[in-house]
Length: 470
Image (cartoon, rainbow, N blue to C red):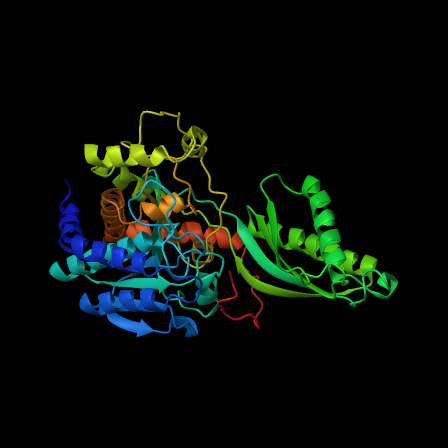
């Protein structure tokens, strides 16, 4: 074991305290930009651990930053603590058991995400202090990853401009390096305004906003044949115009999410969607107004950092799960179909093994796996060299954004996986703090990519963070 692996004892020393933070955040699930209690819990923990605390980062009340150390490189750990609506569930049960309250649930494991990132940051700052080493360690508590693009707003305000490198992770059912890919996306609301009329007596006097929205959907469905296979377009009605079918609907609002593998492809595809909306308004003699809600960039790869993290993944191996953990995971797997388990292995580029309830292996470097979700970590990755880990915290096959993920959020499996991935992140952070050659290689790779394609935020200057950004 390397001398620098002594940092692992600093992780173990603070593990129980940060597990308690994770469980406390799980108990108060809050959604985009409304993470008041969750942010307060992280703020209290930062102060308790000796960080210098900055509140209201980028003007957002639920964003916080803690810093420790001096001189040397600035190493940032990115945390999240937002939950999802309508995915509440009791902890540790093997059936859908919604809890009373607001209906929110930590179905993407962000209670674990923020706590493990803070655990890694705490271990690194304590190690540097104990060895009198230079380096500034920061923990960023970032709101509204679930569609609100909190980090994208933070990037827009220059929050990460003096950071040298950033580290994060995400809960899943495997341990490894997060695939350096994601989908850039933009969220737009299209509001069609027409003219109300009696649907039977004088329909010819009305101009239906609902018809316009439905024609837009038809047009976008035809567009799907003529866009890249990796691109995605989703929609949801926010206001269908009312519940009275005998009234020609005068106003309808529909939200669209447009996603592409690369930021450069997002702009032209979004323009085509806009033209379809305009065409639908023309056909129905209605008016259409558009509002950008949020936008996220895709993740920019950083091979030097990914290789460094992979080395620690392979040396540490999988989390130390025991037979009790495997029994728990088997029972959880019984609540979803085998196809979910098989898909999990395929998603990771590994051969399915239905006898493995938990990952007793780590993902190899490279492979054909990729992420077709979206994350605002992407915007940070265009600003500074960034790397992410995957941490096994649930039964293989558990779907993110499911009640089963919420139910496992306080389990021993989740706790062990959280501490394990914190060690991977802490070791990677120590590499960056003590190995100037690695940091320079990461910065050179990052600069070369930006020289080919500079970062452009698609969030208009007038768009501000809002709880509506869901």
